[in-house]
Length: 371
Image (cartoon, rainbow, N blue to C red):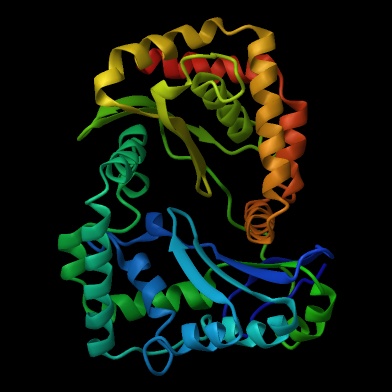
């Protein structure tokens, strides 16, 4: 394990190299522990804007082009409690990709013109997102289950507040994130041992142990949207990740993916299990025309037998095991687990193995109450 920090930029929460000898790629995942829940009042979306600005180093698209020239890809996403940045490149080019990734984390002063350009990009992204009813409903579900103004607002931001953001506001939030936010970095894939020297060029420091994960007030809720309905519950994280995995198993059982409710699986359009740092959201998305059947299904969920739950548990365990065959997934969950003190990526597989039916029934009961 490597414990380091990007020199004078931000504390590193921890970093790790995970060898996957059979892979020809390396996935580099960075988690900046600062998300939309930290947006100042009246500046919803400023962290999302900062995520876009991180890529503006020199000419627009220059960092993307540098990674693409290596045969790789560079992406980022803003969540409620963190920004995720990841790069995937052929293994032989990973040592070159590390310093390119490091450039994203260097403090920089962007001009007002650049800020305005990226604001337009963010607003366009939000307009496109509004065209996907299921995505809109899932965002509304997050907002509904939390009795908390900061945690309940949209991760992408409120368009009117984004439009009003000044260059000074964007620069202030960027400097706050880049100079103080804990950072976790993970490399997973083939030949990652060779990355140690590249990571060692970054100044070493002890990881910052601070930063709890106190979950905001939450409850189970049901919503109806354009063509879709959703029901979900927010769960706090625990050190063993049992709550998140139990939520997955509960939804898996309801969706019938483990054959626990054979013949009715098509009622659930999409399972919902989405993480953030302080809490996770689990639930189901369904077609509005089938609401009555789905709600009956959810209410009946508390009657599932131990055998039904066990089949769903085994299915979720297999999903975790398969997901770690993908280096991007492995790097993300390793970084996420380290950033939030859960352990490592395989803590999720272990949680699935250790899960008891009563853990799942508690969540099924909460969902049934909202139905």
